[in-house]
Length: 181
Image (cartoon, rainbow, N blue to C red; front, side, top):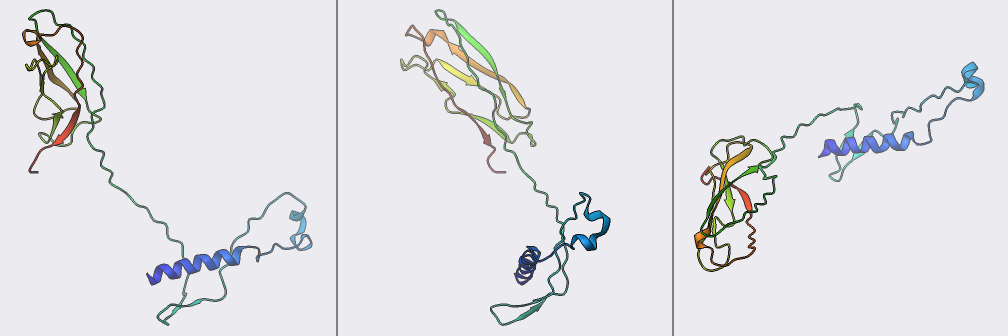
């Protein structure tokens, strides 16, 4: 903490001393370069005084040298596994027809661990026409082991659908982490 205060104090003193105190020589002392359009950058001077700092514990800190420190930091960022595809399935069921509709789910990246992530559906078995009979099921692999999961099947049993018409159902899918590890 005390080292940081000394560095901060040094920076503040350097900024104060570099603002307007340093002057450029006049045109007479510059010689022939004064008439050309050459600009000389202002360089902050090292503070001559004060080089002592007294903190709240009455300890005296003496500034011995000023140095510039270049630091590099590296951060390990973990991007979570996410579903990036939207799935919309439209199907027409006629009479007692049974349909098995395959669909794909695309992830944002390949999972780094095998047999660790799974798909969790808000509903895997549901009643599409709201008559009390389960007529639609979703079958999906237990684990996600590749970027595109293409072994998913939506199975509709037309013999259990009693109401005619257009039926819609929204199912939410999330990525689930295996328990215990």
